[in-house]
Image 1 (cartoon, helix red, strand yellow):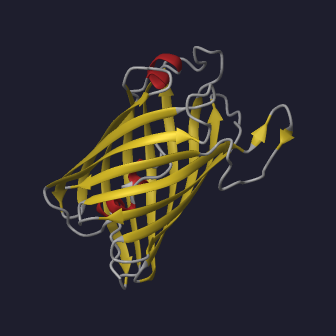
Image 2: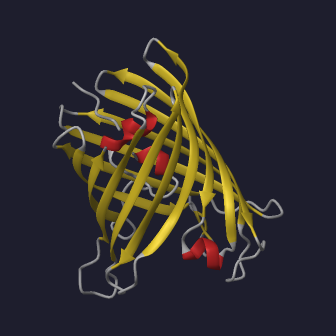
Length: 273
């Protein structure tokens, strides 16, 4: 069975799950063409009935570009945007980044591979620029890949970040997050040569200026996709993001992979080039 793993983890800080079809291209230790990349468009919705006040729907798009400098060393850029349908908002950009990537620092017998990414954040979104007064940030992201079987790949990716803001307090009177640490674990399972399933779990911590620990959070996701060709994939799945603690109820560490009240359904089309 062929592992057509090619986008997801490289933008996992921006959104919870992305097509497994683009995962390999962004994690591969093999030499990519001089110029490569991937694009995606998607529709997102919560599970409330449409045409009700609780309904939330949006469309999104993103693009990744890679330029191979030498060997497995890449310069990577990512940017995207989204538009809320239900509230009639204009198309707005999401945060992007520029990165140096090398996914072939170390490998053993083709079963274990260690790589890394160093990112420079680009706060394109209104929330980052106007609300939080963020002007940049940096992240160090090791990538650990384990080929469990020819059809199953396990990925673990920690992410340590430092953000830079003009002001320590945002426009809403809350302390901005200076440091962040997240842990991402995913399993890429090629069911057939064309069908895959990818469950993902993310745990996040952050600290405000002054060292104050903020509420941890988690994100769980699952994606089922069909690859028409080596470059075109249609996928559908869900994401569920929640805080691990609620102020009014005290500590709450219950992890729910799916919750009808908080989960988001999405369907996406991805193109790898």
